[in-house]
Image (cartoon, rainbow, N blue to C red; front, side, top):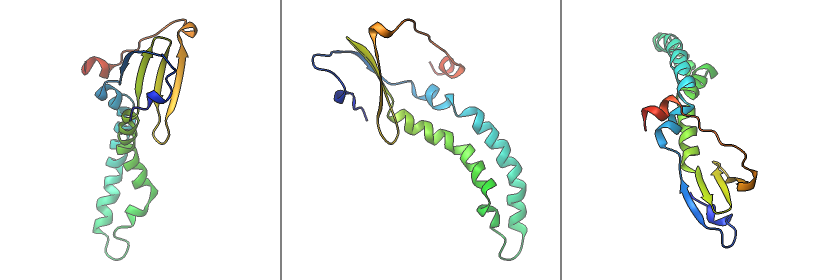
Length: 132
């Protein structure tokens, strides 16, 4: 949800507004942990399949173990988190300053006035190159 109107000053004009590109943003922080999660769950698959062969009330006990849930968290957690962060991330350049909006639960705003900007950097990652 874009909530930038709440923080704009009177007579402040928006020059540019936008969001990050979805796929580079989404994949940027998820790949390393997801790859580790794949190996983790591959190792856990041995225990999962063994537990299915176990007779009696302990058949599904593997699903109560934290190792299983940690593995699922590593597989899907970063992707879910990045999706929700992306939904609320917006950038705005006005005639006075740069505004960055983010936050999942509440909205966080960062402001940088033009007179405080001394240099700028652009970091282009592998996913930026692949999806642009």
